[in-house]
Length: 185
Image 1 (cartoon, helix red, strand yellow):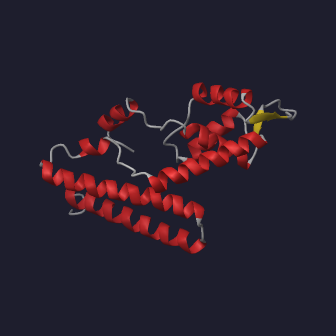
Image 2 (cartoon, rainbow, N blue to C red; image 1 turned 180 degrees about the vertical axis):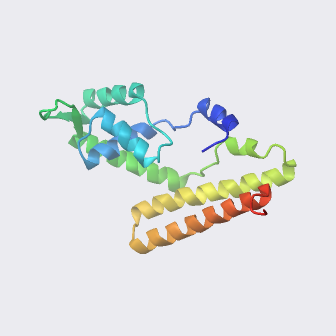
């Protein structure tokens, strides 16, 4: 995924925005009742293995949500696994969170992560600034696209989004090979 120095930097940065886990848990519990370990597994699956929340994050959050009436424990099956589901109050909180997400995406300028400022530190400043601006535009466009696709999903919009992302990824992979000399054997 990342070269070793980047892994080190990412371990020491807040990689997950505040409130992200709560929003993800609410969305998952809106779909179906889940246990804490099932929530961790599902988030890991949906992030393609890039992030798995820790039990020290998930279980205190579930306790807080339950104590505040946002979720309730569903009757356990023979297995005895504790699963949770949203209450009406929890569904209202989820709706508020969705509105905040949409408002944030539409009303605020999304900025690139601080890491982008350091990615091109050996390139002359003027050129690195051009790359940073282009990367920021790409992230903003991607963030807006994800919100729009979520709100106005159609099969055609999905297929076009997938086509563009696959083409862009392929172009960047080809450019990496060309720059590194891998493609010229």
